[in-house]
Structure formats: C-alpha cells, structure tokens
Amino acid sequence: MPLTEDVVVRRKVSIRAQATEERRQQILVAAAAAFASSGYNATSLRDVASRAGLSHTGLLHHFPDKPGLLEAVLDDQIQRAAEAFPLESEDGETFFRALVAIAERDTAQAVEVRLFAMLSAEALTPGHPAHGYMTRWYERVRTRLTEAFRDLDRRGLYKGGALPPEQAAIHVSAMRDGATLQWLLAPDQVDLVGTVRAQIELYADLEL
Amino acid sequence: MPLTEDVVVRRKVSIRAQATEERRQQILVAAAAAFASSGYNATSLRDVASRAGLSHTGLLHHFPDKPGLLEAVLDDQIQRAAEAFPLESEDGETFFRALVAIAERDTAQAVEVRLFAMLSAEALTPGHPAHGYMTRWYERVRTRLTEAFRDLDRRGLYKGGALPPEQAAIHVSAMRDGATLQWLLAPDQVDLVGTVRAQIELYADLEL
DNA sequence: GTCTATAGCGAGATAGAC
DNA sequence: GTCTATCTCGCTATAGAC
Image (tube, rainbow over all chains, first blue to last red; front, side):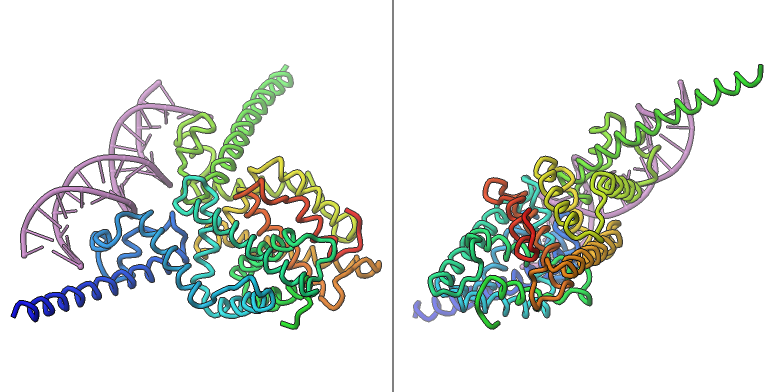
C-alpha cells in the first residue's frame, strides 16, 4: 500500500513544517519586541535569539541575516495590522472611526507603536534596510487619507474649508506620529486617543 | 618689565585657548552632521573624527566619551537655536510667526532637523543618553505653546473653539514633528512650510 | 594636542558536529 | 534544527610617545 505510506510521510512533513513555522513566529515576536525597545541598530541578533530561547546561530537558520530578519518582521507586522483593521478608504466615515479605534488599541499595545516610531526615524538614513519600506508606507498613508477626506467631502462632511484634502491628510498622519512620540515619552501628560479624536473632528463633521 | 611679560604670556594662553575652542566647535559641527545622517547608535567616534579631520583619540582629548560628546552637541544646538530664534511665548502672535520662520529656515538647513528627528526617536529608550533631554524638551515645548495659545485667546485670536489650549499645543507640536519626518523622507511630496502655516491658521486667527 | 599602539569587548556571520 | 567553536571585523577607551 504505497498510498498510505505516502500519506504518513506527508503528515510527518507537515507536522515538522508547522513546528518550524511556530519557531519562526516566536522569533518574529521576539525580534519585534527587541527592535521596539532599542531600535534596529542597537539590537543584536543575540538579544533577539535569547528572547526567543535559542542561540543566535539557531536564529540564523530561520532567517538569512539581520536585514532579512527586519524585513520579515515588517511584513509580519503589516499583515497583522491589515487583518485587525481592514481599512476601506472608500467609506470615509468608517475609515476615520477605524483610526480612532487603532489609537485606542495602540494605547494598550505599546510594542508595535514603539517599533514603528523607532524604525521610521532610523530609516531616514537611505542605507537603512527599512528605508524603502517607510518611504512607501507614508506615500500609501497619504493617499489613503486623501481618498477618505475626498469621500467625506462628497458627502458634505469635510470641514477643512479651503484646505485641500491632500494637506488635511498630511496634517492627520503627521499629527498621529508626533503625538505617538510624545505619548511614548510621557504617557501621563499626553492623551493619545483624545488628541487623535479631537483633531479628526476638526476636519470632519463626525461624532467619534 | 614684568607687566609686559605677563601680558605676552596671557596672550599666548588665550590664543591657545581660542584655538582649542575652535577645534571643539569643528568637532561639534562634525558630530552633529554625523549623528544627523545615521543617528547616535550607528555613528562611530571614528566617523566623527574623520569628518573633523583628526583621529578618534584626538577627539577623545576634547570630549570625555561618546555620551559626553552627544551631550555637548545637544547643548550647543539649543544654544544656537535660542540665539537664532528667541521665542517669547508671552506674545502669541510673534511666537507663531517665529514657528513659521523656523520651518522656513529648516527647509534650507536639513542637518539640524534630521539630527533632532533621529535622536528624538532613538531617545525613546530609557537608557539612551538623550532620553532625559528629550523628555524635558517636549514638556517645555508643550508649556510654551500652551502659553502662546492662551495669549491668543486673551486677544480673541484663538480659533480652537472648545478645544483647550493644552490640546492645541499637542496638536501643533506633534504635527510639526510628524510633518518633518515625512518631509525628510519625501521632500518633493510634502510642503513643510505650507503645512505648518496652514495648520496654525486653523487654530489662530492670523495671516501668516 | 595629537598621534600610534593596543587592550578588550561585542558584533555578524560561517563551519561543522550532533 | 540547534548547537559549539571560531573567524573577522569594528567599536570604545586607555596608555604612552612626541
């Protein structure tokens, strides 16, 4: 019965592949936490490895090198974000409600927020492995926000007046990043959610 | 004539002291440029030294160690900033005009802007040598901006409506930082001065 | 005041045993 | 798949000559 043998072999393979995949995920979580706390440059592969409970050479079996690890972390991060909040900029109202919801969640999950704050600044250096990623990210954020504001405008809910939606998009995205930075430095003095909500209500005729 | 001898000696000493001071300044400029381009962690003392045209041990004759150098750079930077723009928050109008003027100058002098953007994120880590500095900086920024908005309010020039001046202060300071980040990543797509001006005009009844 | 030489460490990455 | 051992590099910082 060659067929059953084949099935057993396949199952073994898939079990092993699953274990490997779990290991990869553990490492990605550890790496995200490490990069979030100290940034990419200041974090060593040994730091990440010890957090994940293996040696740094063990880690390098799963990822090619340090830039490759960062890339994988970023991919994993945007995938999770996309799953948690599928932002549809065609519907401006739900879009901006989602922005407030994201801010709310972020106050409870400081790791991802810190990760992004640290990397976006480090990545200003053209040679940084996340430089291209960040440039593309902000372009995307600006276009999505602009679309959302345009949708609001169509429904008569845009309060920007003479301010073009492109500018409003920069205002909102920029403020979110700056507020995050100040909130991370002084959580007691900066109300992240309230700040985000209040700003959006200045540009949109919505009750958030 | 002991007096003249004394004068000669003093002059020699002061000339030498002046040369040392110039050297220090050269190093500070080099260090600011280096930290601005790659951040503090990723910059080596050898990088800084070669920019200043001396060996890294020569550099360590003028500054005690790497954190000490960063501290000196920051001190030098705020001193220059204070001289260039003596911000008086008692007069809200000139205060906000100065903010726009600073943004204008910054578009021409990207070094200081980059320096600050990179360090403020790196310094999120509590152990970073600029952590305390940044925490204090943003506290100060918030209070100054709040005072300026209160002054506008007294003169009937505050357009924030129900938004408390403290919140407006966070909005404006946060937006400036976030806009700077996006401008550094994509100078062609983000108009820093226009963005800053437009935002302030949303909160203040001023023609900037 | 600036240098060469060097100590001492920690990093990223590879080789090869198990 | 994970490890130990090791290579090689660059870093901060110190010691001491000039």
